[in-house]
Image (cartoon, rainbow, N blue to C red; front, top):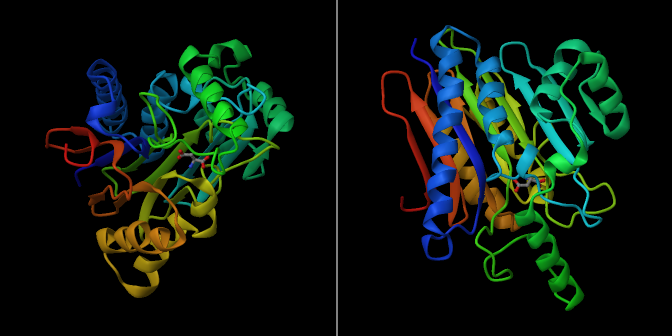
Length: 318
Ligand code: ASP
């Protein structure tokens, strides 16, 4: 069968009027590069698992997205990265949270899945495991970008001014070009009909006390099961955890016989909206259908089906 691949680079208040065109152009180019990296694997009859990792790595290496190199800062101006990956053929999964020196957290999540007897490793332990696998480690300074520092200072100024909501970036709160939730992710269906999902993030700007969002939580930010779908989420993680977003979409398909698009729409524009959770998801089923719903103004996203042209967009009406 033909393969399918979808990616995201975060959802949020993304409107053309407050987004410099040069930044948008570069972000689109990096989304295209991520699609190409994943498609290259799938074209060689590689697995969906390797394809989602390849696509996410490109986004982790880009300064435009909140993951890997472009990750946002914690309250203490440090970096704490979370990631997870799941193989729909076997339901094997790997996840990590709170790592500070791993260049590509998604690769470490894959190593956890394949080489440890565990699913979820955190902090110093996850980094110790990373060293045993030969995963590339970097100095903390690799993640320090001026843009993210400006965002942290802006959020902290808002916090100091007594604003109630300071953990999430919104256009109304911040006068910054890049006001969005941020996370990157990929889902794929390979030529054998196997599904996989991968998600990676720096979390929320100004997060503290070891906060972990939905991204590394299997069933919340990431899920894959050949019998239903593969899902990767982005948005306000606290809500996505409580709504079990990714596994709820799969469960609606499995138990209620709902199709991919209807199941995803019900969770993103139904359950999440009722709870007050902003964000979106990308998902693919074993027939290669793709859906990319979000309940924010925009979501960095892209998709590709074998034999068809790739598309990439940012805003709602792109
Ligand atoms: N979901 C991520 C988190 O809550 C952030 C995001 O997608 O913007 O950590």
